[in-house]
Length: 323
Image 1: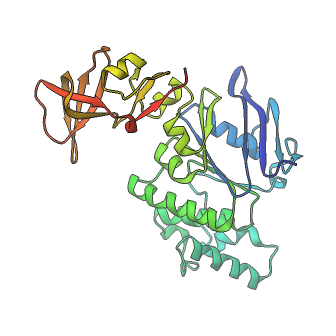
Image 2 (image 1 turned 60 degrees about the vertical axis):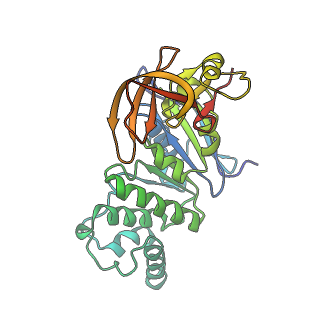
């Protein structure tokens, strides 16, 4: 028996438009899988279909080997957390967190609420009105409320997208810690690559409703399955073996090389290439150069270059693509 979530050949359609095109994936017990893609890639449609909020035009959703494709939303044991939190403004923090625990007596409910608020870093906030919370605090309350009924699967749809960068970076750590501490498996939808790489055990890259690759973060970054995945992750240009070797790649290559953000380094013994432009940054300058292949590439330099600069390729900043 397959434990946890299994999605097989899922298809979601809106009229003639196919939003999800035969996607298959698994979420094992305790695992967090991120659905990563640009707007319109189908990640939210897939999440909603797994939750039962959208009908499947094809495929199945199973949990622990049991087909739940036709099971109503409220009976699947899955909980969805949205980006706006959807807290009840007329209830206190404790009232929101304990909303789904009406089946417990008052003492047990209060203990569970206190446990979760401490876990998300809001101990002592139970009596506060949610309208007095900051955006980050409100999302912590939403997380605590989502975890309160011990869901079989927590589904998070862009939960941090409305917050500023610094707060997102902090709260993604809170989310990851809290889900690990409770052992709750999760599906985490995001367009933010940093969030996906920080929180997920595996990342599913989607584009135009198709699953392009599903892999652990390190494997995804070092070995993109295709040019499309590599370019989505920020690699480029894509060099043929001879082009990479001309830039100093050590040894022979069987496939193409995707040049990453740190794929070029300054080297007095390297290949001299023309500078196209310079964009000053914090601690370094982003230098656009023209490679012998005709492609433009970026070099991070600590000093302003002249009209030309000597560079070599750094394999540690590149990815190897399959032939």
